[in-house]
Length: 409
Image (cartoon, rainbow, N blue to C red; front, side, top):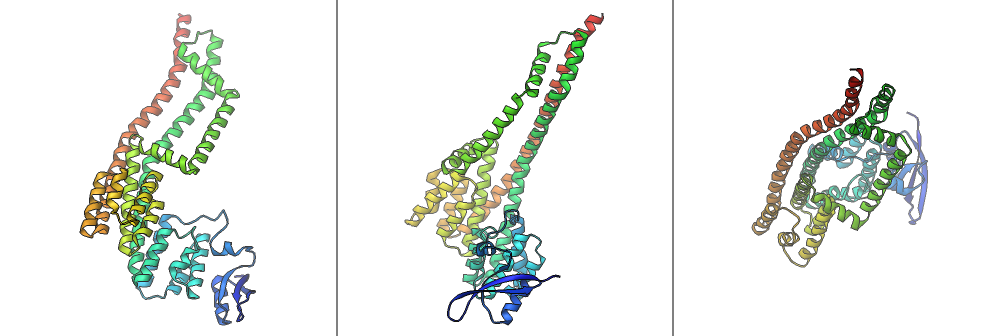
């Protein structure tokens, strides 16, 4: 393998920051070379990298950050290595060598370097917010503080796997109808724009009088083939852009999320999903020893709906003043009554994490049942929709044939 040029930044004995360029085959070899020279690097990056910030956490736009499943696998493997007695730095180096995602590989290598230089695992992870979210960092820091890093990593892996499973269920529920709807629209546009004009021309040559429904479809076809279609596409793109800009604002996000909670079928599914996410995450953080106020901050950012996030934020302020979390959340009336009742019992008995874990199990089962029922209901509905679209086009094309048959008679 050809050598690369790496640039290390370090401080000399007088405390002055200096830089040094070395040749090495990879990042691990560069770190070993620095250790042999007795140099404690502040940062280590390839010479082509122009910013320390890039090397310490921000990567190029085309590098894909790891998903929930990738993080779960990372936590699981790291827990297994730590459990086997492998030193943490060696474990991170092994995982960096096996990692295929460029951003994730850089992050793990950087974390390994920082830990080798004396930093804690949690603080080293915190420097890569695009890779290690607040939930992961908080649980790792709590595990290090309590001396139960191995156990916390296993809990983190389980939590991330549950979250990934939950996300896949939601994608399955929403992906099917959206895909079928897009296909139905494309079929309708294709037949309207290309097929109907051909038949309309044939009937015109035969002198057949077009029925009202057929004439309406012909007029629609002419409209779609004109410059109106460009205006329509432009209008839809503009509406999508405005919706995205609105959702980027705090008030707009709140209004859209509130509307989503009121949608038939999907609103109930969104609320159950957010409730399961809240209970599972808060239970895991509490069991790991994360302080309740910090746990509420993390839950607020991961609950997935700004209306529920605002309720968690308001409840946090009451808890900070000495109030009970369950009472504060009940007053905001955004979470299901059953979940809040179980939370209240958990607070009273001192087993809040165990109770919330059971609530999360219940709502995850509810979500699975809801997704299954929705899929079973939407499948025939989508078939009827596509059949109705194709049938309407065929009806519009065959109706004029009766006039042609009458002329032949």
